[in-house]
Picture 1 (cartoon, chains in turn green, orange, cyan, yellow):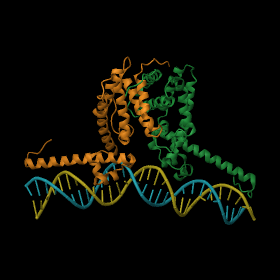
Picture 2: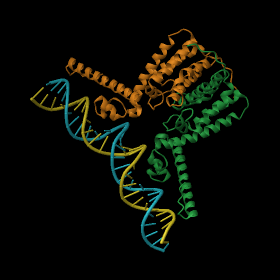
Picture 3: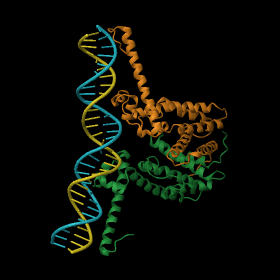
Picture 4: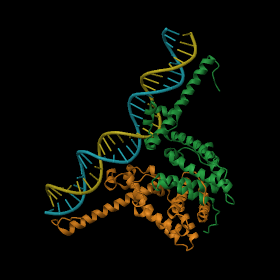
Length: 209
Length: 209
DNA sequence: CTCGAATTTCTAGCACTGCTAGAATCGCGC
DNA sequence: GCGCGATTCTAGCAGTGCTAGAAATTCGAG
């Protein structure tokens, strides 16, 4: 918008472009290093000082890119949502049978969380400044949720689709978080997912309260 | 144990008893205040300084009772396991029908977590120094798990009972944590629980991978 | 090529955290 | 009343997230 007409046009503009490019590079560097550090030593080890040291800048530089530490976690989380969506979509496309697709997606979900525990933690456990309302949630998050809907939708039968997705998601999320906290033996996760998928595929009898 | 025979028996002994009683009182005071503070302002607000201020002692006193801050969280969590077990048992005894019992216990579980989010957090989300192996876990924790088994066992049919309990537990836990983080609309939790219970009651068809 | 201005970056510091060593205080038994 | 042992506190350390203001760097104009 207000590029001053007085300044000599080209060189000033290209200089600014280079600066913005360098800034963007440094920003993604911060996110990448934060993620690596979290995955290697846990999020507690991701302090502003250590992060600054690794990117070879001083701490205040971080704050010229992000509002605070949690904003960095949020940036990592957003990457995670995009990657999760891609993983789930890939799993879904490996088959045409609806039941097999559900099984594949469920396993992909758990595998994703197991492969990158810190990433999953940033997405779903840690405090981030992401809104989560059905409308206000950012696109990558809605896309991940929609991917679950793609595979649960054809199986919903008479059930409320949104609720059906939510309990499927919750069950997977519960398996992931309990296993990560050492509450469940990780070696049997695959069997649990199979059992869960079987229950989700079953036609429900109406529960009595 | 070894009360020295040289000291004048009664008074010395009763003094020591009083001291131990006062110590025990103070210890439970610490746990109570920590829990109240966490429930009122979140666990982040439970700092050793604020805790010490509220119990009207200095910080080092806390460390004469607990090894560290996490040990205090652990103490709160243990209280929670006992209370959760009681709640689930009460819900189970409200009916004799197995299906209705499952529904009652599931709702009781979610209600427990909703009523005391900080307590639930201490039990299942925060870092505590509780062991979680099937053998090493403390009794109150095993009791809570067993309570889920009491209601899911009669419905397990051909399924592996332990795995069946675990996926039921995980699903409830997922609903709770996602709702607490704002990922799920809390107003529909009851409907989700009903839907989930319906799925757990259904006889599964074997999933294909 | 040099200089002044603008932007970027860093140093130093604040208020807070969990935790602890050593000093001060207290209460008990004689 | 007095001395000793247990209890409690003061003061401090190293770490945290974050920021104001100084220093350094870069850039464009003359």
